[in-house]
Structures are given as structure tokens and as C-alpha cells.
Image: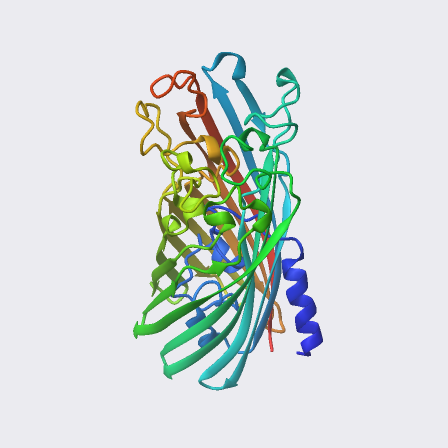
Length: 431
């Protein structure tokens, strides 16, 4: 493939940004085949998404190109009750996103593969209208519309090597770009920030980052494969325009994560895959720090308040049935812990994981069901479809920003809610 064509494809893959959020703000899966299997991919050899799933898998993929896109539709809402004149309910706009994906792999020799995967995270994207009863102020006391938009694009060049015919290791340096904006947060500026004027309505800011993902994959029995991946925290430049919003003067890194998986060839036609993934959101202060009691130093301060997200465990189960040489069918289920927890007591306002800041990013879905299929053309190339539904979930918590007489007098309970649907299609070309 010519370098010019490869560059164009990478650019297109990132052009629409990433609004993909299911396991917190990590995608439930990367690539249409993994989407159809609930995200189970650590021990699977399917396509060129190895830079996102397991770099070692690229050693077994062969010469291949995958290009796809997903229509992603998250539905978010937030409401407040019990606070008297400040009660309201709103739904977020911006419910449809087009998310491209891309991967390419070339075997340099029978044991050594060089490829690239382009993928994204995000989904911290909301757009709530102003509330007429509040004079068009929004649910958090700002002027007009309320929302944020976070997009993360990662390019993962990948080198994978077969240490034996059935076992491989791989490494993917991660080159990251992220883009962010916030608006309607005047209620936090200047009273709750260490850097007034750097909280809201600053337009888009961007930052660049780097990291690495390593992986192993191998066959330990004729019908059993295993896989493991690890990615330490991915470090990014600061969002300088929003140093009054994110902890540590605008730092927003991607947290440490790792996966373990197995795939069992139960019959010649049926493959069963199970993955466990851990995402350590608490590693990133702007995500994991609680608002209370950290708010006393102000948003944006060193070790200042974040979104209060907890670390999560994710379980992914997938089934793949090869009906014949043309048709392959998939189904999957994905369950994640909820990173956002609500508290309806918080009488002392200490160690209280609040719902309030997560009105901006209500990533509360826990359970996802998926189906998919691949049709293999006479040429050997593949057309793959996948559908994923994330079931509605809600979290309710005390509104600790409305406490007229100090701790124990917080008047109001906030509820955030979300469900999601997505439809994906990809074309895989053996080269």
C-alpha cells in the first residue's frame, strides 16, 4: 500500500472523532468482529485491530486491511428533585455519531508482522439545553446550553513476533491526540476553581500524548488459546485552556488498563471467548479524584477534584459460530462495574462520590448485548456487521452543591441516566 493512501485512511479514521463510550469512556470493543462478541478479543485472531486489542495477535493475522465505520447513538438525561425551585429534567442532544476505524498488517517474514491500528475513546460528550423556567440557565447554574465534548484518537503502530509457531509477543507504541471543550459551566467559575477564567466557554483545546501496549497470545492446547495485554497510563500534554477545570492544571491522561483472555474451540464450528479487563480510572486525578473533600482547593488545583470515578472490572463473553465457508455468526455480552456511584446520605460531606459533576459525563451503563455476522466473498474478503445495545442504567445521588446551611442540609437528589445503541460495518481485505 502506498504511504499516501495509508495516510489518507488514518486521517479519515480520526476525522469524526470518538464519541464511543460503554466501559466508562473506553469502548466496549474495537473492530466490528470484537463488537459482535461483546468485546472479547485478547485471545482471538480476527482482524487488524490488534493495536487496540492485543498487539501479539497481529503475528497470526497475515497480510490484511480492515476499514469500517459505526453509527453510535448514546441517550443521556439528567434530573434534579427535592430542591424546590431548582428541580428540572433535561435530555442531552447530540445523539448520533459516525465513528470510523482502520487497521493494516503486513508480514515482513513468516514470523514478524508490522502493522497499524487507529482507534478512539471518548463519549464524555453531552449537550443539554438551557431550561426556560430558569431563565434559560442550565442544570448546573450556568448560562444557556451545558455540555462537554472529549475526543481521543490513538494511532498504534504494531510489531509482533512469533517466538514459536503457536506463541507470539507484540508491542504497540501509542501516539495519542485528544480534543476537548466545555460550555455552560459559569456556575463553577469563579467560586469553585483555582484558576478563574479557565473553566468554560474557551472553545476547543487539544493535547498530544504517548504510551505503549504490550501483549502475548498463544495456543496452549489444540483447542485452547490464551492472551494477555497491558498498557500503563498514557501521558498527555495539559489542556491549558481548561486548567481551571481538570485537576493538576489541566491534566487528562488515559488510565492504566490490562486484559486477560481465553478462547476455546468447543467444536470445529463454535469458538467461545472470555476476557477480563481492568481499567484503573483512579490513576488519573481529573477522572478519579472525588469532588468532596477535594473541592476545598478548587477545580484545577494540584490533586484537585475530579469526576469521582472508581476503577472498574469488565467481563466480556463472546460466541462465534462458523456456519459454512461463507457465513459466520457472533453473539456477546459485556458487563462492567459502574465507575460512578451515588450517595443519598453524605451527612458529613466527606468521601462522597457525587452524581453532580457526572451530569457532564453520565457513563453509567453496565450491561451490553451484541450480535454480529461476517459474509465471506468469493475473493476471500469479508463484510462484517455488528449491533450492540447497552441497557439503560441510572444513578442517583445527593446534590452536594445545594447545601444552604452546610453539611447535612443538602437539598436535592440528582439522577443521571444513559442507554446506547450502535450499528457497525467493516470490510476486510486479505492482501
